[in-house]
Image (cartoon, rainbow, N blue to C red; front, side):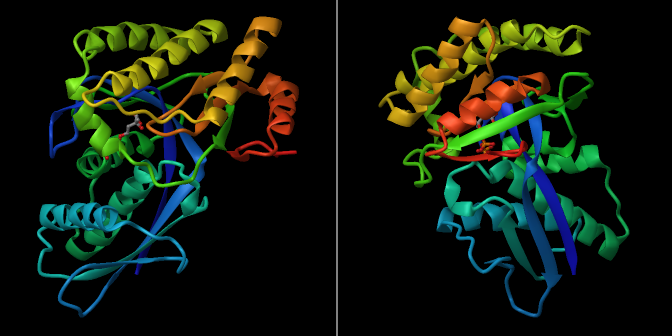
Length: 317
Ligand code: DP6
């Protein structure tokens, strides 16, 4: 029996749109921060049945049929890579955060599946593969999962290059507010396809590249330019959501509480000249990053929104 866990990550520069369907090649590079407090666990065991099967590790987690299929398909792909198609396994998985809460779990679950399979298949066949190779393989299961193999900030060029970005600024508080835990009507995999029809897609790569260069310069510098980082990450998530709303047909994820939280952060910036980094993925939940010296503000913000479920790496009031 083999067991592994992997963290989630939040993109500051978003992977949105694919140039090669089936291979998860992003049309543009992306950059994320790894979230070690939001993890998935996977357990793999060989069994005598005629197929690979999946079940919830905690008996509670549910996966849609499409979700299960995607997970098992990736497992088959990994088995093929190791020449192990004749063996059958049971895969059990769970998220450390409640699976009904609507936090994107594909990054952590595919990273955990790949890590666990690499250990299992490495032991069975004697073929050990590096973390870099595991990240590359994980990308085929779910693009964003390839950024979950290193701590801190990670850049993915959209294809075969995944690079940890050394930075002294990665030690941040993270909060994600669960505005809705309902299943999304448009999954992020569908969003990747639909943005190809957006009138704002031409020029997206150029816009991303400019932001990417600027964000990397900020993360590299000794003195943190927090305000500029906030502006760049802000522009980036609105850019992605504008792609959604200008697709044919348009779709979107904002709910009243998403806007309420975003507005509060904007107010903070306007009144104090300081505030959190704000971002959203393909869903209504809102992520905030705070510097460690902003603890008081971060707690105040959490208190003010204590009616909205929140996951964080800080002690919540
Ligand atoms: C909006 O990695 O979930 O979170 O490759 O189809 O599994 P697939 O897509 P996925 O896309 C994530 C999109 C995003 C932005 C990001 O994490 O970069």
